[in-house]
Image 1 (cartoon, one colour):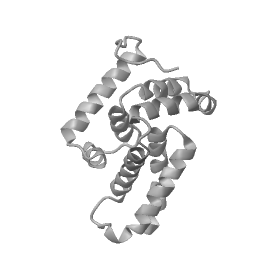
Image 2 (cartoon, helix red, strand yellow):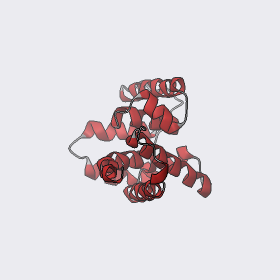
Image 3 (cartoon, one colour):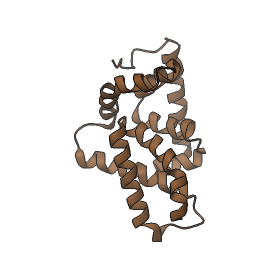
Image 4 (cartoon, helix red, strand yellow):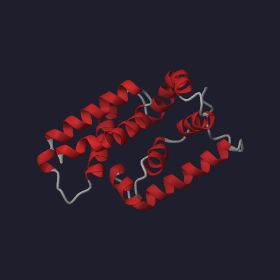
Length: 168
């Protein structure tokens, strides 16, 4: 198991960035996830998917840290993080205007929709794997995914409804 950890670091970093919206915090989250995984290696069951196990640890670590801080809701953290990182995102992705626009629009979704979309679309997980990581039934995941995709389509086409907040 320990030999396979390095195969999953890049995916963990992507998901951590989606959650944190800040490279420094995302790196810290991945490091904390790996420390927890190594410490709990004796509890890992080889018949389980290592990737799903690691993503679940990362997701639960993120949620736990947000609860401990009790500063803001997860939605406010995503929106604040996007505002702070807006210049950095533009610099990093100047050559891909569509991707930058999608990142901005995705940040306007609810945290539940963001998590569902990123695990399915970015990390190419199955519905069952993503539902396990988020600790929700598959039907709930599918509903969040459908609502998130619908909201993104409306925002991207300029037909968004007034219920979406504009982030600058």
